[in-house]
Amino acid sequence: MEELRLVAGALMAGLGAVGGAIGVGVAASKYLEGIARQPELQGYLLGQFFIMMALVDALPIISLAFGLIFLFT
Image (cartoon, rainbow, N blue to C red; front, side):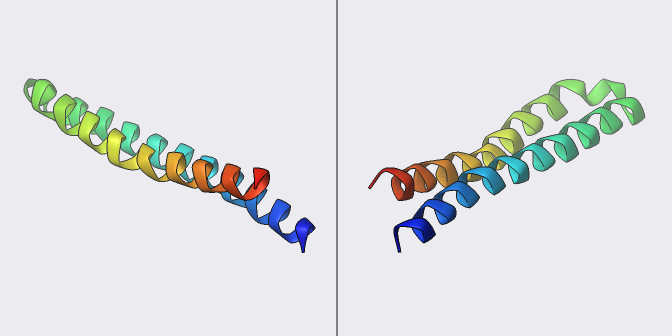
C-alpha cells in the first residue's frame, strides 16, 4: 500500500507540472497573438494575461502540495 501512495504522489506532482506548462504555453501564445492583431490593447491584454497566469499556475501548485503530502506522510 505504501508503494501505491508513492506512485500517486509522484503522478500528482508530475502531471500537475505538465498541465501547468501546457496551460502557460497556450496562454502566452494567445497573448502574443492578441498583441500582434491589436498592438494598442497591449496594456489591457497584459493585465488579463497576468490574471490568467495566476489561475493557470494555481492548479500545479495545489497538485504539488497534495503530491508532497502523499509522498511524505
